[in-house]
Every structure is written in structure tokens, then in C-alpha cells.
Length: 489
Image 1 (cartoon, rainbow, N blue to C red):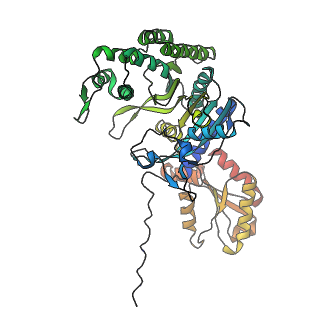
Image 2: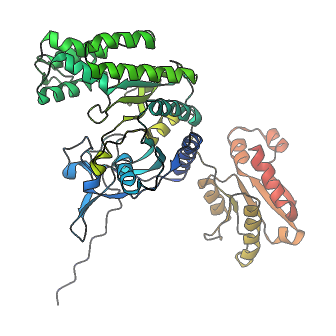
Image 3: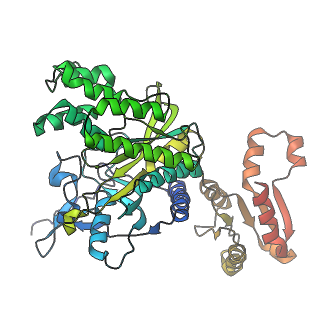
């Protein structure tokens, strides 16, 4: 009889581009989402939780990374042969939800949504295939007052989560202004227009000189490879460069330079007028250039957006993996996308919104030391006598009823030292001890584990005597003493 071949054990590894999140990380994210939701709710937005799975047809072709299978989404064929996929953002599902339920929704419809999204992209350092987004959108409002409101709300969010003024800037631009610039250039070939857009998108990486080279014959990149240019003349390139470098000393100066860059284009003039309205609306609410600025160098996803675009950038410096100083960069962005719902309804529905990269924002706060990712564990009630488990469970019940996080040690109680090691690994602030003698006397021992750890590292013998880290109290005073210790910590 043939020997049955043993099945190899599965490898305990996360799939490439994914990661696990533990205690403090999960709590930090939940706390941040709660703060952001509070701002969104205060602005009058309602929560929406849509399906994590959408039909591929509903998701459309808006994902920028098209070099991956299924155009960058995780897709599969359902039993009825329909193709479905995990959502790659929270905006495409919103378009489907609004088109499907528009007769029951108010107009404008203001919603916020939070949750994970999935992208079948090539992973890299800090770039995962699953990450959290936190969106707010207004559907059905054509007025740029909706765009101005989103910018103000984004500013408020950053300050509420712990990014003070001076450490961030919200930058605003308009796709229509760029359309005016392209019109001035006289480009009729769609291929050339797309190439110009891709080149503009590199402005923040290569600067004015690099864009000039890429619009012309081409340039050598940092690796030494030669990148072919668009092939424009210097005269053709000038409107783009004037547009990208038109940020002035204040909004009035910037807008004047933009009007010069767009020439006689009516589309461009409309875009500049919208930027002027946004600037006036923000100024009326007290949002000055220390928080929100008109900045033509914002070129994020200009192929996707139809009007104003905005980006929140953190301006403080951090050290990269090689110890070099660099700015943290963008943590949120959005804009007006009036064509997205039209895919479902055939009618143009104005819409504008913002998406916050929660994981990047958390990373920024950790870089600044504003989140320690250090979560206090529960009070641990140790087990001195396994036959008295009911007594120990009664203790944790009292602590929990008082709103104190607590648990009974449920491992092998034979070695008391292992119980304290467990409490240490759990980052527990307090251990409760009641052996047979304590039970007979009606007392409990309460050990301040945080103070004990600090004293063990730094204290002299005299300090040990002056500041005991273990207390003996009446059993009835258990909750009060634990609360007192926690408040001191």
C-alpha cells in the first residue's frame, strides 16, 4: 500500500503587500477616525457604509495604475459569470450608491465614508495593497462654495487630529485653468495633450527646469536613463511653465499671473474666476494663507477632475531611511469630479470631495511624537488559588462595572512569576493579588506595575521606602484604590 504523502504545513506569512495591525495601532486608527468623523458630522455630512465589493462595471476605469492584472483591482468572476472586485477607493462606490438611490436621497447629498480599500498595485516601502481611506463628498452642488467648504473642513480635520497651523498647508488649483493653458498652446493632438499632462504631473519631482526639458527634447533622469520629451518648441512650452510658476506673494498676485497664463481662453477664465470665489469664501470664514492657498503647482490627477482640485501637504521635515531631511508630503487630496455619476444616469451630476490617507496621517503624527502607539493594558487579577476562581472573577466584575479595563489571569497559575511577566507583556498598569492569607484577613495586595518598573530602573533604597509600589487595602476598597493608582499614572 502506497504511503500517504503528508501535506506540507502552510507558511505563516502575510500575502505580499499586506500587513497585520495590533492593539495600539488599531486603537490609534479608531481614535483618529472618530475625531475625523466628528468634524465631518459637525459640517452636516451623513455617514454611509457601502459594500466592499462592487461590480467591475460599476467601478469603471478610474484607477490610475493600469499596468496590473484587472486594471489594478482584485477581481473575480461570480457564479452568474458577472465580474466583481474589491473597491479600490470610496468614490466610485458613492457614484453607484447615488445613482441607485437618488430618488430617496436629498439633493445635494452630503456623505462621509471610512474604511479599507484594496489595490492590486506593486507594493513598496510604506505602500500596501490594503489601506484605509476617510472620505467626505457633496453630490449635486454645482457651486464652488461646496469646494471651499471641503477645503475648510480639511483644514479643521488636520488641526483636530493634532497637526497645528504651520505644519500643514491646503493647496488649491483648478483643472479648467490648465485646460485654458492647453488651449493657448494650440495642441490639437490628444496624445500630445496627454503627454503634457503627464509631464506637468512630474513638476514636484523635477522642478521647472526638468519640466522644460521634458516638454522639449527630453532629459536624463537620476538613474542616467534618457527620457524622451514631448517635442514642443520653447514657445509652445511657455504657457505651461508660466502656469506652473505663477504662485505669487498672495492670492491676488497669483490670480493675476494665472489670467496672463491662460490668454483668451474662456474655459481658463472660468477656472480663475472659480479660484477667486474660493479664495473670497475662505477669507470670509477666516481661513487665511497660513492654512489654505491658491497654488498652480497642484496637479494631482488632473485627468480625473473637472474643476477645483486640492491637496493637504504636511510641511514639517522628517529624516528618511538614510538620515536625510525631507518634507513629509501629501496626506489628503480631492477635487471636483462632475462626470462620475453621469456614467450611470446619462446626466451630469456635479460632485466634489476629499479623501484622507489615514495611515499616512497616523505615520506623520508618530514622526512628530504626537502618538506614542503605547496602549495601556488591563488590570490583571492574579490567581493564587485555582479553586477560588469565582472570587477573582468577582473582582474583575467589580472593576469592569466601574469602567476599569480588567482581566483574570487565565494561564497556568502555578508559577506566580509568570503571571507578573504576563502582566508586563500586556503593559498592565496594576496587578491585584489575593492569596489565602489575604482572603482570611479581608484584604488585597495591589501592585503599581508602572511605578514599580520606574523605581526598579532609577530609584535608590531610600526612595523605595518613601514611595512603595505595592499597597495593602481592605477588599471593599479594591476599586477605589485601583482607580486612584490609575489616575496618578
